[in-house]
Image (cartoon, rainbow, N blue to C red; front, side, top):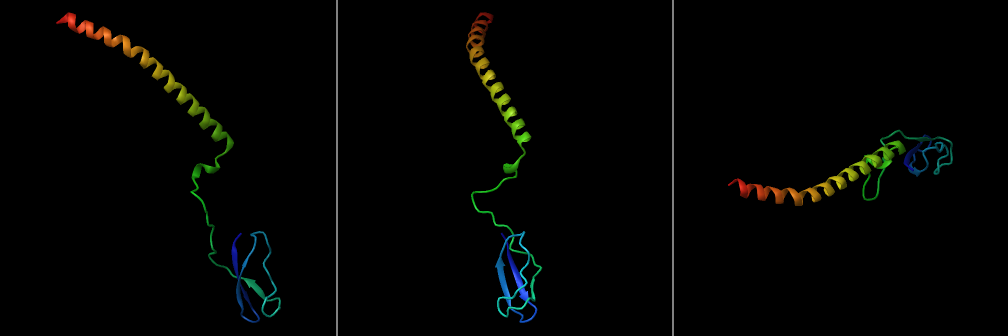
Length: 105
């Protein structure tokens, strides 16, 4: 919820009011009680994000998240398959290459 600046047209009083964006502007001045208060146009206080951080990907759509999960699963499956293939192929070709090198010299 933002903080709005107000000024009274009758008594020239200034004050700030913390209210919802959807709330209608206050018309009654708290100093003089007349209905001459106006909300000031300004830059506003802005939005303050508190916490460890906010990222562009925090609010992705569900379809994007499902696609990303599927891509991660396929990548992890491909990595696990390639690791198992390299482990089984590492033991046999090295033994063959050593024996072929010694016989050719």
